[in-house]
Length: 140
View 1 (cartoon, helix red, strand yellow):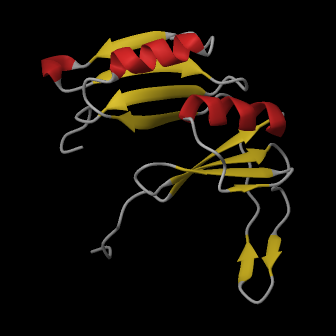
View 2: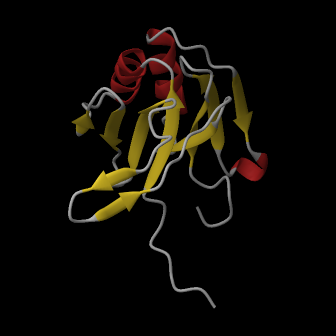
């Protein structure tokens, strides 16, 4: 049996233009990054998790953390998917916010039995973002 988990800590997206993506997510989430450099930007979300943007190709070599260890190489390509949880009843506000930013809502799904609602959009790198109320999955 596996030891217990405490949840998901971070989600990473790989982007082609860090400045463009940093600005997009700062406006979308109405957040300032908690950490930003040329190759990485980190946003802390309300639940304590973080959304990390990496410049595509900038993490292909191991990174030595002095006195702590080494971060293995990683990267990603193609349109990835991620979902951010939104409170019940805020989908209309999120639809307006996305529209105010010029972000097209590509699709909406009202999940069966009234268990949730999702708004799908694309970021500047073509990643498929989802703003979703809890309840899409059993016990979420």
